Each structure stands twice: as structure tokens, then as C-alpha cells.
Image (cartoon, rainbow, N blue to C red; front, side, top):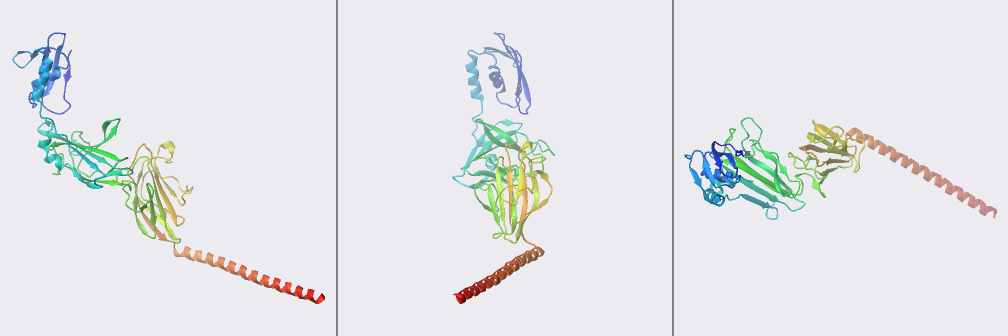
Length: 408
């Protein structure tokens, strides 16, 4: 039986060949990091899991035979005496019942590097820390980064190293799996949880191996527990619904949830615009990237934006999706609705737009006044004719009554 075991991290290795006698154990080759303390004991402990033998010959130790009675237990004791002290786990928990917002960073982890222990590889100490955020329904967690610099794989690369990155992790069937890796010298886009929990894990090295000219290492970020989906404009109604009244503000910005980060899966967000009777709603989209293709329907599994002059569907407008250049939308009347629909497939950054309540142009106003004047004239004429006719009818009745009295 022959096998090679190679640790999954970079290092300089020494090779030990262990020859097991008895029970047909055969040969077993182990590659061990050269800078590991007690490395031969580590090799014995690893090889011992292959066969329960008590006669060991290790090449490189002058062909000496080590007689170990009950070697299984003894090797475990030797390994235990050589093992480094247990690593103190770094874990920070943020509960919305305690604080609704705050700052967290990697500085505490880096400053406490010696107390936290960690495996030393290639002269750098590997450090880890988990950050757990617990919201109360219907809250969601949003993370916005203020400082960030974690080296990429190499200079001019955007790829991340799992051993030196900020992991966005998700819990799946009781296990945590990395959903996204964050690294580089640019601020990551905001993160938002799909539910009441969000977990991050920072895996770093000290001293770091920098691949850019930025001297700062690590990250600094702000967390917030929100119910408004990160949408700060308008007046929020139930769920993801926001109302914009011209009586409160005639212009402003509105955007998709968590913009400029990714919007959420399985969400329907409504934006209602109410103007005065002589106003129209004008929307100018300065950014538009909604996951979808073609006709933006269910057959293409697309997310989409719906526009309408009514609370119900407006046949005048088709669905909008994909990545589009700047464009403008106008309402026909004083009311307008914008709705974002997303499914559980893929998400994108979403949209950002400027809204303005514009007064109806003067020409239209004059036309409206003329129409009103014509209507008033018609009503006025109709009313006068009715009065004249009624007066004649009364006079006729009176004449008939007098004639009746004369003949009676």
C-alpha cells in the first residue's frame, strides 16, 4: 500500500518514507512542511491511521528502528505533547435588540494576532474571525464598507484567494458555505441579507503579502438593521412600497433596494407618484440593470420593471429588463406607478432614477381653459333656454286657467 499526502497550503516540504512491517502494511510516503515543529511525530501520527503496526523504520534517522509498544496510544500522546496550544476562536455577534447600527473592522483581529494564535505558514500567521448579524423580523442587515484592502491573487488581478479574503457565507443544511469572496483595493458594493441573518468570515495573514501599493490591510464597515430595504426616499407604506407626493417634494431620487449593491431575490417593490391636477410625473433613469432578456416574461425567467398610469396593468407600456442606457418615462396624468419584480434565479444592481413633478405646459392649460369655458357656455345657454321655456309654459297655463274661469 503506497500513498502520498500533501497539505493543501504552500510550504517547503521534507519527504519521509515510513516502512511498516507486519500485516502487509507496505510503504507509506508523507510530505511534511519543513518549518513545522515536531514534524516527524506529525508524520508518525498521520501514518498510524493507515495501519496499526508497532515496528517503524524512518529513513533519514540513521535507519534506526523505534520499538513502540501499543504505538497507537503512545503516538497520540507524543502528538498531543507537540501540538500548539488551542487557538482562541474569534467571533463577534451583533444583535439588533442591542444596537441598530455600528462599526466593525479587522483591526481588532490583527492587533490580537498573538493571543488568537493561528497556523504559521511561510512566515505569516493565518488569522480568522467570524462576524454574525442577527436581525428581528421584518428587519434586514445591510453592510456598507468605508475602508477595504485585501490582496488579490497577484498584481493586476481581480481573483481572490480563499486564504486571504472576506467570505460572505450562507448556512445550508446546518453547514456554512462561501457564497462570495471579497478582495482587492476597491470598496465592495453594499451587502444586504435576504432574511434576518448575515454571516461574514474574514481569513487573513499577518504580516500580509500585499499585491498593490495601498498600505492599509483589512476592512472597516458599517452595519445597519433596516426595514426600508435601504431606500431612503419617499414615505414607506406596507412592505416594499413607497409613496412620493408633489405636495412634499417636487423632485428627488429613487432606486432599487440596496442600490448600488445587488437587489434582493423574490421581492416586489412599488413606487407610487402623486402629483397635483395640473402636474405630470417625469422619470429620468440614470442607471438601469435588471436581470432579464427578451420580452422580460416568465418564460425567460426574467426580473423586470413595470410602468403604469394606473394601479392595475397599463397596456401602453411593455416590461423593461436588461442593461439599458439612460431613458425617460412620462405619465399621462397626475399619477404614475413603477414596480420592480424579482424572482429566485439571478439578481443585478437594479436602477436609479430622478423623479420630477412638472406643471402642465401653458398651451395645454389654455386649451383646458377653453374646453372648460365652452362647457360652461353650453351649460349656461342650456340653463337660460330652460328658464325661458318654463316661463312660457307657466304663462300659457295661466291664460288657459283664466279662459276656463270666463266660460264657467
